[in-house]
Length: 113
Image (cartoon, rainbow, N blue to C red; front, side, top):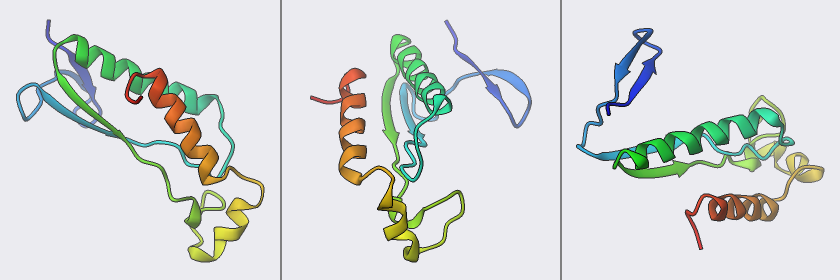
C-alpha cells in the first residue's frame, strides 16, 4: 500500500517516496523549555509518533531525531541572547527536569532503555 502525504507546496496529496530507498530520516522540533507545556505540545508529539509508527508498519527504516531548544537563549518568544539565561531559569524548567521528561517519553515510545 502506498503512503500518501499532503504536500503544502503543491497543495496536493502525493505518494511518499524517500530519497534513499526504505530509509527515512525524520528531524522534528522538540520541547522548548522556556515556557510551560500545553495541549498543543501533546498534539504535535502524538502526530510525530503516529507518523513514525505508520512508516515502520510499512517497513521503512526510520531514524527519528527530536531537537531541544537551547534554554539559555530564550526567556520569551523572542531571542534576547545570552543575557536572558538567568531569567529563563528563574521559574521555568531546569535542564535536569527537561532531560528526565525526554527520557520518560523515549521509554514510552520504546526508543530508550
